[in-house]
Image (cartoon, rainbow, N blue to C red; front, side):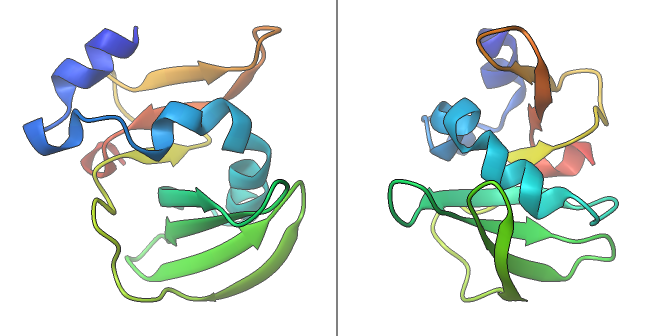
Length: 119
């Protein structure tokens, strides 16, 4: 299924990025997206062994930075765009047919990975 996602992404987005660790990052990403209808994660990076910073695009187009582990620690207006930001997107619901379903090792759905134009 990952191969199908890679084919659907623009050429610049086909190199692995943060989405290669999406299962490990998912608890923090899900925490950041909770209560943010229509939001999607455009980028994510580990701050330390427990905390993740996620760059969100909110419904309406505003961008937000969220720091979380399993719960949100802080939210703030997004900083400067990062290289590769927005090539991939993680969302809680499936918004297009070629989105890749993200599951944990037990098969539980964690969210969907696609490209930002999907949502």
